[in-house]
Amino acid sequence: MAKNVVPEARAALEKFKMEAASEVGVNLKQGYNGDLTSQQNGSVGGQMVKNMIKKYEEGMK
Image 1 (cartoon, helix red, strand yellow):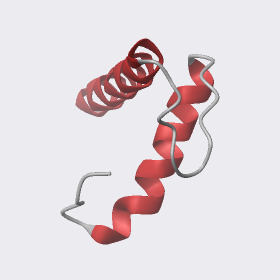
Image 2 (tube, rainbow, N blue to C red):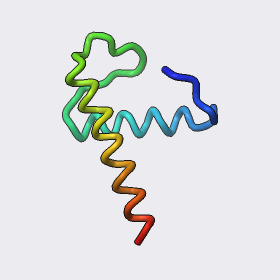
Image 3 (cartoon, rainbow, N blue to C red):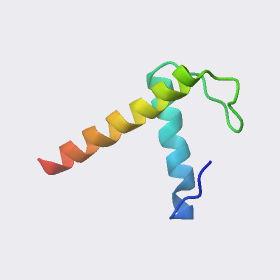
């Protein structure tokens, strides 16, 4: 995992990632997930971005 600018945010980021994975039906486990396909990993990352954009847009209202 990349180095976080705010180390205290690590747990929140992990929770956010697990929630996004659950939303798209990818079964992430704690620790190493190198057995997942690039498509599965990409769908998790894409869902995370969608959720971030949604939260940002909600904050603009």
